[in-house]
Image (cartoon, rainbow, N blue to C red; front, side, top):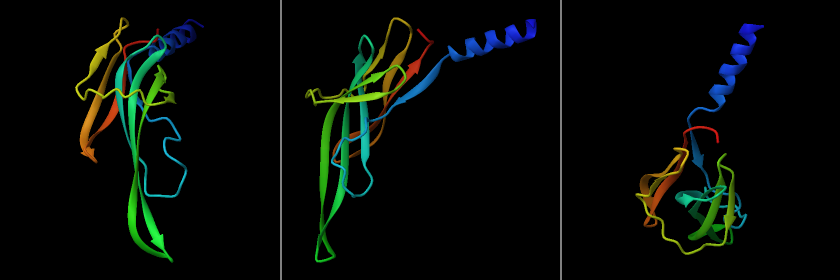
Length: 138
């Protein structure tokens, strides 16, 4: 019995330890059409009372066809604002016009840390994956 309680206690502690959560783009950022792969970049802009705020850039290239022959392409691009909870679940909001700071980092009162992992660019916009480094469960 004592061993079982120790195991349960260790598992509870393990659930409250540090971890990294990728802050992915919310679904349905661009119209649902069949094009090439959707590319998104997420940028965190700060902590909120219930999670994090940020911006998401999305782009997708679509072929243009005339009588079954590809005659060009068009590119769809979109910016949207987003809110993430501390589990990484995203909600999109109308774009607030905030230009993301690629070097933004912040730490909250619990020691949770957010940053953008920038890796290249597309269409002049940095490719970024916003990340939350959770210090512990609140």
